[in-house]
Image (cartoon, rainbow, N blue to C red; front, top):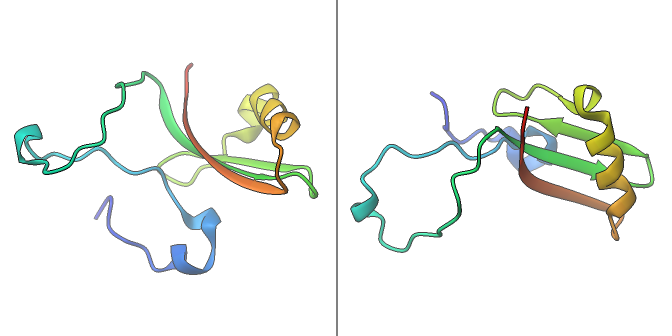
Length: 92
């Protein structure tokens, strides 16, 4: 089932996937977090500066970093930490 919790996420953050949008009624959300409805592909970027590695995964787990090498490089260059996971959207 899409969106189901995967226990592999406990051991390996690279198993994380962007959260899918819910199908519930907005008025039934008790404490919503409001953010714009961005266009594009929702992704998580897994960044490791020491290893000079960036993985950009979509909801299926496909690594899109090679298709978006300039973005992966810019994220690594801007990172002021050893590692990070960034949630975002890629526009095509």
